[in-house]
Length: 66
Image 1 (cartoon, rainbow, N blue to C red):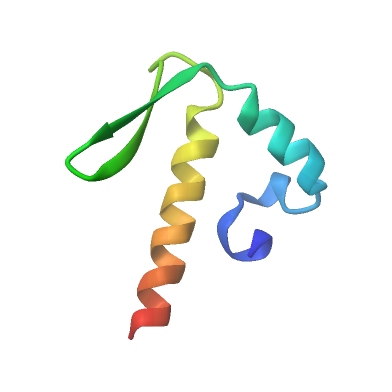
Image 2 (image 1 turned 90 degrees about the horizontal axis):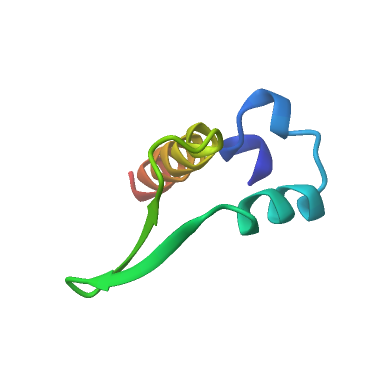
């Protein structure tokens, strides 16, 4: 899953480092319309990582559905 969803420089990192990086993000988890939404500050430098992960998971899930 790491190879399919993470950007290139994050593929070789251990899950412990990835988890610590993601857990330390400032944000808020909000439940709306029966979904959990993670709200992050727009200026945080790690937003690109979250967006890349979401795109990778979405692309992988679409390829599995077909």
